[in-house]
Image (cartoon, rainbow, N blue to C red):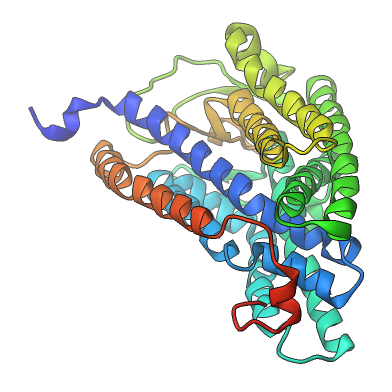
Length: 385
């Protein structure tokens, strides 16, 4: 028996669908509080030393957190080539906006304290704010558009055509709602991080903003779910599903049906755990923010993010990118993956390197654990931003 035949094609596809979700969730949880902290920077810090406290709360770790975005992008490229091709061409302007903001962040971190002028530092403070807000908003908008379907189709030769127009086309009402939900959950997570890493006025203000963001997360998630159930058609495969065949998106028939995105919950009630975690995590964050259990508060907001993102994936399964223009061109877990051998080799590589990344990340957080020290910043420590 050939080694890669130890795991059949169907199982490998499911494994990589799960791994893709895990990597995206890891990015949202790990980099989410960086983005949320940057959004809160102009509002929770009123003096220069307070702004530097916020920056130094995330400065030593934000680069490591972004590794999960790079790994997730690499996984899409290697494991789901059609998904990579459609999403990176269809969402090109959105991706460019995210990339610009993510490039702006490291520049702002490095240059913020190079001069003492108030105008200089204020400009970089707002640059960090933009670097946090734009990715948070645009990524949520993109998810909202995926749930509605993306205007692309495949020709008979499997050449991809995207018929969207501009970035503003993505800014439809439901997409914006999902964008605001993304911002709210990252602000909630970022506020909890700032409370964990700071004392005094910064922590007090962050706690207040975190409470508001937790309430907004609960409300927006509920509105989004109701809107998805009552006003947006989902997708459903109407022909026999071949789970271990070659990747050809055109080998199926698909219809748009009202409420289809909730079909998996009816067929598999255990999936209801995902939206439940989304709500319970946000409620737990709201309640725990009033206590001294700061680490548990961070855990609660992380659980909410896990639940919200998992709800999207479980609702859509087996779809990963539906087509609003030509439903049969929709990409699913069963017809958009790389070959059996490629998925197996990547799984072996991931089994080796992902645990190493996790161990190194855990070690970094252990070394950097504790509150940010205002005295070191005020005295001009060479290690402080």
